[in-house]
Image (cartoon, rainbow, N blue to C red):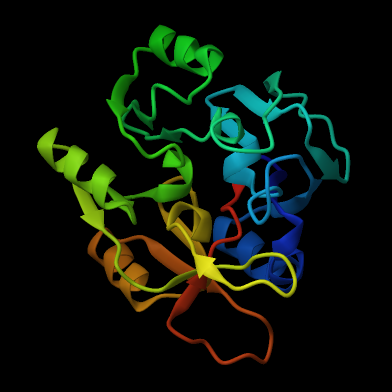
Length: 241
């Protein structure tokens, strides 16, 4: 195992990540260096979310060309392809594609980047088409199943015979200051490590139960000295690189 890994996350999750950095590093057995997305051009509140701005496919990283990271660390081990995203839908969702370890890609064919689709075709991925443009935000892979908070994706996966579960618990999407909190997505509320450990922003009994079914370690990230409630927060997930 490498001496350290980088974790790309939203600056909005900085306090939560920093307070739990030792817990994350201990869980995966190696040092973690957080890289925060500090600004980008898609609309609030998803402008700094990693599932909006970064897509990892094997050793290729698709990155929003308008994204700024802190610290500015080069991604030397990857082929980096920069794609400029737009401020509003659908151009804000060009790389918001869910990539499964089973070589399945869930995407909206009308809003996904042709560059990404071309690479996925070369790698013999099976495409699952959906009307949901925020596919990466909407899904997380736990064990042999794809957990989604989107009913349309859930129905499509069931029809295709792909193991899936519909997540129904509370997910909050923190918005800009002085705005209401919206409903978030399951993919943005958690991130996984090598299909054996799942981290979530906050605590969810439902996630804990699903992880237990598939023998995954479940590690909820909490603020220090704050009681764990049955709610998770969509900060845009995280990408280990």
